[in-house]
Length: 487
Image 1 (tube, rainbow, N blue to C red):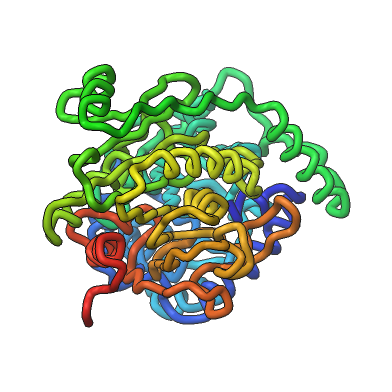
Image 2: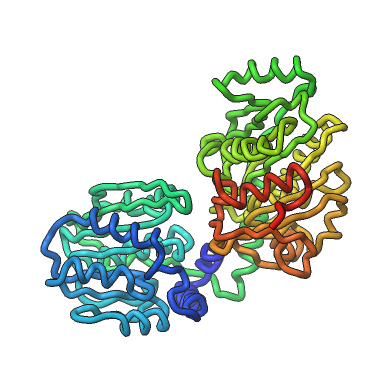
């Protein structure tokens, strides 16, 4: 979301921001452990295996960082001139000190500068996210096309399935042909190695994708506000899901009505992106209920997609809670219209307020004698923060949260204990501000907010509830008992 916002001004402004940002990232050597991390080394080996075997003459590594993979490329193709480019001067300087032979490095801003010459192998890994909007992605692919020879190979390595969104403009470009795609499941971060070939087009393309005329920067904020307001007013909102009585016969009747082998759906709708509420365990006889609220981009189609999707998260929490004994039911609650990452509403609390109204209605309908805990991820934590006031919730646990829509815990007006976890590898956008409907309030893991901070370990944004992880064990224990594990 940060990179998308930064891509709204002209490319020159975006380039200056990215240069300063990655200079800050590389204030320490090898900040992402790209030189030594076993996961990265395995990724390098897999990537090299998928590069088509040819006698390459000029090789370019785009977004090379401190040159860990560039050096491997040079070793794999010793007869080629190998170059690495990155926007950070610090990264390039460190890369140059570690390199030898025909490897060269340069500090270049791909949005506004060309590397010079042409190449027959171009590799770009974990960089396209920074482009932000689709128009900037098209511009980058246009630059790739301009310095790649006909028949040249382009190898892209990015998070999966996010790669599908990043490459959609490339798939539509007649100047490129997809050769192969190899997704890899990984407990920390799934990714894919995708190979394209530069092909001749019947009509010669312009050297670069045309630049759109942009608004003056001083007009940017009003334009964004207008776009967000228009989107909020015009987007259709799906109806709230109807609920049955919470008696055993009524629940069983509802589960059978939404027949899904081996699953218990309390409510289900396929309208729009879809909504669903799934029960794991015996809700009618439960003494404790954990309600899981997912974040942005979730839909019925992705209900079981990742560890933070409502289906998989609910089952993982239930399995972990069962270690403490019987009596806990878990509910995967996709009962609101989650905002998409490309929807301007995602920088506001408007979707959260609509979701909070529905969440309050659902929690108020639960049996009065059960112990309720909320586990809320990412944008879902904004929903929970806006909903929890005055409700009989014992514990509110948020993971990868951009904020809860308030400035401090006392503003939530709840007796619930508030817990917050943030992994060291979670890059969630936490603006730390709330101006009208824009922003999400104070960072919940900051000392001034007042939450009880949970050790998030090295979790990435979508991996807090991965089965077998220490963060899942901590969160489930808090949700069941209201206390952390003993050290």
